[in-house]
Image 1 (cartoon, helix red, strand yellow):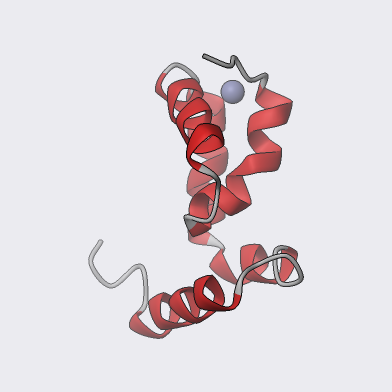
Image 2 (image 1 turned 90 degrees about the vertical axis):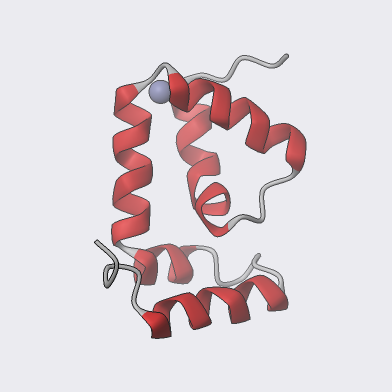
Length: 81
Ligand SMILES: [Zn+2]
């Protein structure tokens, strides 16, 4: 089991939020988030600001993930809250 620092987790959160993080990294981030309120809060910010996340990950994001994110955006993430 890898243990991530907060700084490492933050660099993963964009991809984590988009669901494109590799299984191993995602698991390490999950484990960290369970015991770290600060990173959980940062992840919440990522999800509240999908446009910024999309722009930040635009270059590296696979096409299908991009399409999925656009669909989520068009549905409106906040409509259920
Ligand atoms: Zn943390």
